[in-house]
Image 1 (cartoon, rainbow, N blue to C red):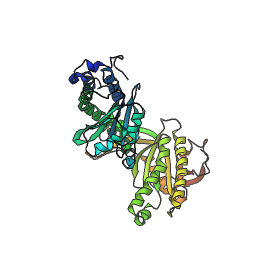
Image 2 (cartoon, rainbow, N blue to C red; image 1 turned 135 degrees about the horizontal axis):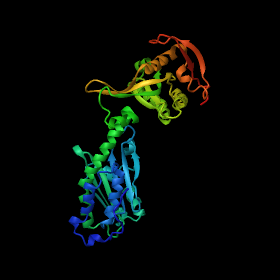
Image 3 (tube, rainbow, N blue to C red; image 1 turned 180 degrees about the horizontal axis):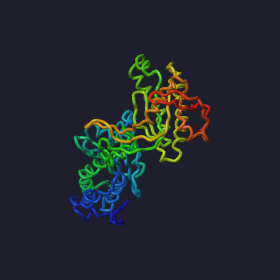
Image 4 (cartoon, one colour; image 1 turned 45 degrees about the vertical axis):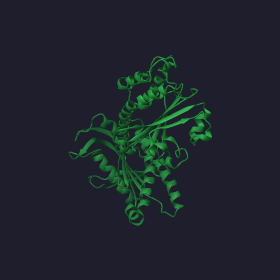
Amino acid sequence: MKTAAEGQDMNASDKIPAATLADGVVDWLTTGTHNERFIDNIFAEMCIRVQQVGIPLKRSTLHVLIQHPQWLGARFMWADGMREAEIARVDFDVRERSEYIGSPANEMQNGATEVRENLERDPALGRKHALYDEMRSKGLTDYVAWPLYHTLGKRHLVTFATDRRGGFEDAHIAGLKKLLPVLALVSEIRIKNRLARTLLETYVGSHAGELILAGATRRGTGTTVRAAIMICDLRDFTKISDNWPRDDVIDLLNDYFDAMSDPIARHGGEILKFIGDGLLAIFPLSQPNACANLLRAVTEARQAMAALNARNNGTGRAPLNYGIGVHVGDVMYGNIGSKSRLDFTVIGPAVNMASRLEALTKQIGKKVLLSRDFAELVDREFELERVGKHAVRGFSDPIELFAFEPSARA
């Protein structure tokens, strides 16, 4: 991260009019950040530059709300001497916790346009919150927080604190306020870029998301990829969804997908879609040990499902069963769909085969069925059970199949 020259006079505010104190930082935010992708880097350098023009900044935070399935927001924190900002994710339930209730963020959420706290005065006379006690313990003397306005009235939060005796001067406050409109624009651009990436990763996967961001949005475009394909399906889901309360069904599906999906991601697989109570994932053979990693993921998923069933058993729920079909081959990886609605997926005979094998798990009574083509790539590392040749719908010749059971070693 590039920074401005150091060693500026920290008393520069005594020599520079309030109206121009932060002009250099504003100019840099406006014209000097276009090549920086990440808001945390911009924020940290902004704080350093603020110090260098003479504003006695000791600590600063930027709080942003994000659209993420797991996190409500993020906090970027910079303190004197840091070259990079610390990033902390914020849980959805934070608004019910003491760290939020009565905090500046809480006040901003309730409509405040400024929170200013003199940390040198008697704490009994000021606001009551652990945050202020923490800042006093670190020698901070003054604190100010302002909303940061993004498009359509979205409010985020930026804070500044100093350890200067007597706190911030009027010139310091005026200089910091001049940063807000430009910081809002700069941060909104970066946050929206990050949101776009996060949403794509959430809905189509990381690899497909990168391709889409790179411009792969034309219908019918795609590449041929050789991959191991895994299709998983939950058993008796129709019966469950007919007899269980709606919210229980949703919780069950989320727990089931967590058990299956987390191991796939850990071992380099990519989940392309959830189909009702099923999922489709691939392990591209361009990755080392892709096929072995698929079976390691299946092993860990089986363990996670066993733990989930044990928890469900304690609440009187029946155990969940599933079937997995695995094949390897060439697939077309790309965009298909209508003129206005596309789906980034894989298609081809290899996908069809994996789907047929998953369906056969019900008939053969095995949780995981592998094609011979896949088994030949992993039989030296894993113990597989030969289950003979079976007719597969849509394929003219019987296919030799193998089962991967709990006794297999990973």
